[in-house]
Image (tube, rainbow, N blue to C red; front, side):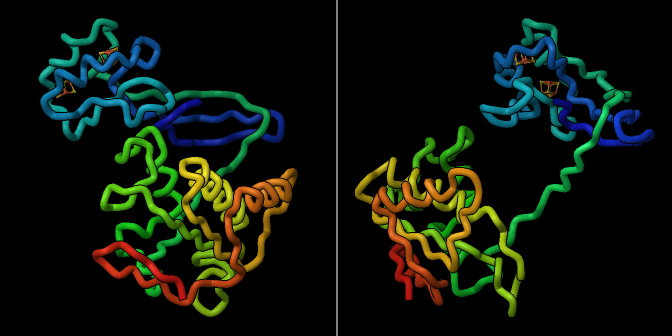
Length: 243
Ligand code: SF4
Ligand code: SF4
């Protein structure tokens, strides 16, 4: 896997492509770095770090915009892995096929006024994942802004999707699946939490996805068909009503 790398050119045909890549400098030799963190402990500018605990590759990287070239990290590194003179590199490879992954932008739920995304306890699925991930600010626990575990959690499917009059017409094809997975996670963290999924149609198609849906229901997660019309955040108490 090549990170911080851009495609410069592709030549050839199916089964025989010559690819030229341009890899940006990271100023740390990935082969030598053991992620011991001694360099970061000595850096007064917070310029060298591991982006997050499970980062791939497991190697530190220097942010040159913060770095002042003091070389304290070089002295601290027992593996001689710091290369402040790194200029990046051109890489030529030959491959049989190319997969074009365009990436995507997530929908901004603030566009739907009635969902009150401004409230700190109204979060997106990506923010939910971040809260439970290794880079979590809550110690990988599901937590409201007041530090308490919520006693009720509502998941709203199709936010910004299948909304012909205002937003995207298409189905995201994923929120039914990850929504159910996240709902099950909430139940796993606390079986007494009241969890409800608001949906338009359950489109969990695919191998073993019907079983996922059945399993979610068996966990005691409620399914209500329909879009919530309004979500009253009752700021600052954090309580919420669904109309
Ligand atoms: S050279 Fe100095 S400022 Fe730059 S990453 Fe190393 S310790 Fe930090
Ligand atoms: S001190 Fe050297 S080996 Fe340790 S994390 Fe920093 S660059 Fe990697």
